[in-house]
Image 1 (cartoon, rainbow, N blue to C red):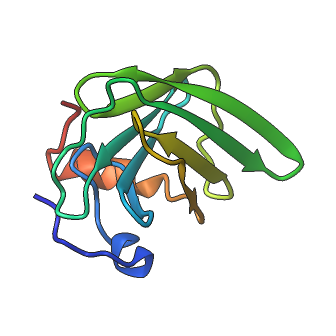
Image 2: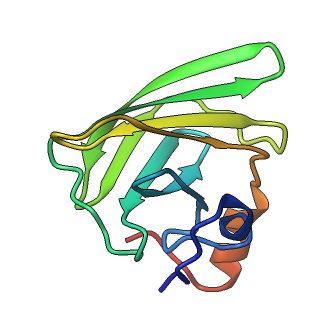
Length: 130
């Protein structure tokens, strides 16, 4: 499991359970996985327990230089949201993720700097998608 680290400085050093980058909002832990054709966000509480995304909504804004891409996130799996499209996997990428769980208030966090090496490190450690 993921250590219970609540600050984003600590979470920047953690590979998420799905091989992505971790960030914390006031209420949630968000894990971001960016691929060239898909963006995934996994949601957990601060004790790393998966939270249901049933009835949730979300959006991601990807910023790379002057290029801005918005992606609507839709529910998938037990605790995930995802968007399909063409996404830049680049170390200069900044991603702002907003997630609203059913009946909840929007939670937003910035993934910056983006670290594409996290996914490679996760694969090397034998972590695969659930």
